[in-house]
Length: 592
Image (cartoon, rainbow, N blue to C red):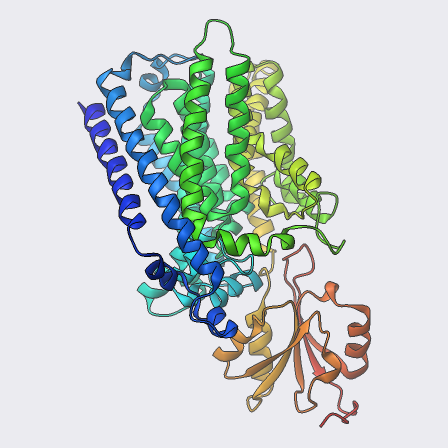
């Protein structure tokens, strides 16, 4: 009865989605274009509506019409499949009795509650830190202009659309901007990611045909305390949503392969679309799932239903692709206009062979710092290579981790650039491997030592040691980029000051905190190209990304300015320090 009710609810939801797309397809292009207009960009261009915005509105209407038809067909197929009673489907390689044998007991619920509570405390501890460059850029370039501009504009790469939309919602509800308010969507997504990864590990255990409770408890603690999980939960960017939707989509993909239900495939399609809407690099995950589905069609295992499962996955991916293109259609003309910015043209962009590649490697340990990552890397290797003797791990690992080599190869062959955080869609699979590695270690110790109490003591001690290392690594890590600290240091040093300078990247993000401190902030260009033209009445300067300063700029800086204070930051792996400079008293005053 519950299953039938769920099916009816899903069918109704699919019909509603189809009708919603149909309704949006009937909205006039001019009305949509006005809604998607970014007022600042339009006024700067001297037009009411930019041509790319109008083109995006046209594409959106076209894709809405197509999506309405596709989702209507989906509702029809789903209704037919429900009438045929899909409950006859059986799992491919595991028995469903583990679902009954491994219920979510009150003890497990308490363990999950405790682990998530610890995770919440760690995240609340850092949520009020200074916003860093990308967070401020997303706010001043997109979120402050409302949902239409967020939905339909992509002129700089800081727009993680779904997250930016939710940030705007948080700002509207709170009635103003602050660090916790801007980070609230990421915070809740980070907490939800813990539960999503637990569900993924449970599904992997069902594939293996092993009890689920112990694995669920362990991975819950790992996900709650993993430094990467904590840090991405308190950053107003789309990465915590990338992790969340990667865990949910991978879980639903495995579940759909196992139980062969249309409901699971539809949920999977929606999750993939939302994941890509959160961060464009997420597209690598469904691409990897498409490769798996294609392999199942071409090389089905004997006496299995692999070919039909593969076809179901391809249909679900097609639905996800059409829905994704529809969601992105308003901003696609803008995105295509700046497509060259995704190429490594300058020669100094980060690649897999740079420090970013090193941190991709550290990321498989669940942390960004070497000491904190080492235990996780060891457990990951043990768990991952355990698939050689345990074939039941292979499909869960392929589903969650195959996207990582595809990302690396695609980035290099495409001549693009890469940050370690782009690979965070693989984090759920990484935590799955770490969990299985921990169980492999436990099994090995129990085979070597018959004293169960002693083995359990060693395992508990090891778990506490790793937790302590992770907690200490977070405690010793400075804010990502303490811009606020630098600005208010200047204000405290000289309460009468009215104007300062900032040296950094293109966006004048320092001005956000400058306004809060009652100071005007004059940008001196990308990496300080106009540093020699700073008026001498400006006595203070904030420098961002100090390792990226050009040699000529650094020379002028050292001749005319003195370092007053350094605020450590960890963004870009050591390039996140915020430097506060004060003009040398006898410096050249010819520009007064």
